[in-house]
Length: 528
Image: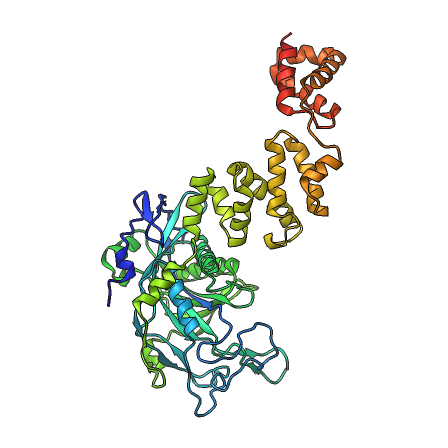
């Protein structure tokens, strides 16, 4: 086996530069580590330690081991092949595209890709698991160690180590609210391919946990490997929470000894970043109360009730031996070629961190503006179309402040924008050529947004062209000054009051006068 991908990159996040997933462009990812969240107990201060197991549904038209559709919202039990229903004699046949999507995700997380992996049977009974076992990858996952840089928007960032990504089948869905006496089972989801992305316990606050899952979702959306729709259950997380005294986590990182950390409890099936943060807070305080009262935290699986604001025991925490894992006898070990992995890597899109760094470098954007514009691919693509050949900062201001603001007001996504990139670029061109002022441009934008008309045509038809004739503007300035001698005296004593005259001139000219020219003339006239 060739040198692991993770070993090929000397990634040092403490240095000002580090390589991208492409291994070529150097990114400026210097940052400060955030301080861990400290919770004051009755007796001591405590810190949080959090690890996450994120279940991401692979974006694929077919399931992991059958050709059944993965379409969401289909009639119950309509997307079920014989193998999904565990009919006797049915054998799984692996979906190569699902394997490709897992490899692509691993590459996007700067992770090691295992050329040899294998599937195991995880044995347990649920009514919505008709085979009585789940095909998963315990011992030999397809993706090994990687890392995700989680930025928190305040100049701090946390590198979170990914331990592994393994593939597995999803279960079906039990439905308990359709009949007072019976439960129903929908197997449409049974057999859908999941990637379980397992992190190390590197997350130190509820906010970091939410930012981590959002960063994973952003990367996978860029890659096209998972749509990240948490509402539909396509992205959900099991959150492992423990507490420790200050300094204990650092000892764990130095030694690798988990004995320095508290006993963890797993909160299952979280599909909301808001609820994830609430659940972590509630569970941490529960554990603190137990420990400070002299008790011990039991390792277990818990559920979160957002209505009551509490976590509740679901079952004691099982270990691998409880599931009687063994290699799946119907599936040979999976072997992939390095050339195939290399072709997938060469076809990777520009990822969020690289795109953000490029936007900051090429367009002179702030960290905040670049983060907003690269939040998703559609927004980034829209901005790039607007900014092409134009002032990048001005383009960013118009996209973020005017367009995004209006879309948010109307509850629309960027792909539903009534204003095309060409139209918004046209407005910026009109400003740059002094054809219109910034104030008039906002009126033009509003008309374009509501009617779809071309900005240049709007300006021409509506008579909105900016007045640049110095003589005409000077006449308006003279008239305003002559009519307001008291204001002139005040402005001559306090030059800051000159803005009043500028406003009056703009009002008198219907906002069409060139603001720069108006300011210059007002300043000259007031000086006498």
